[in-house]
Image (cartoon, rainbow, N blue to C red; front, side, top):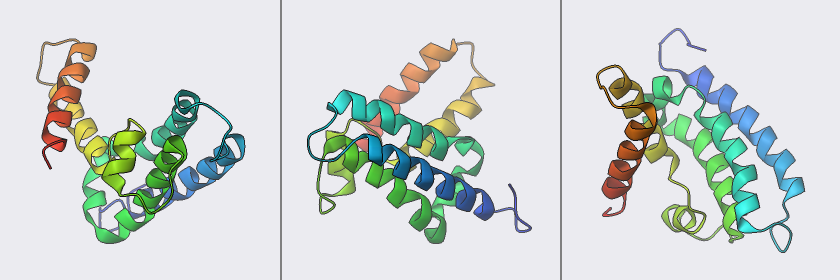
Length: 143
């Protein structure tokens, strides 16, 4: 969904609302204390990640807008908090490390770069994905 100003604000609103509903539904399946193992919580959380990142290679620039980030960011963070079984006072970077996920902005950058590199490389999709994942993690960790 593209709005009149071509800034994907409606897309971020739609994706955030949909991911929020999915996250709330999955939260009933995975209680924060006890319940599922971390690997199973991570699997269920990947559904929220898939909903949030659908088509993100096109609208990743919209996350730079503060209003868009305020809608999409907390949903992803709450999902990572569920995976880590952590309290909400933990930082975003820490919860991403504990839950073995990448922050949403880093994930968006990775997907955008993959989309652009697929057209100009002879590597297979798996090789390209592995190479880009290693590169993006190396860039993210020193921060």
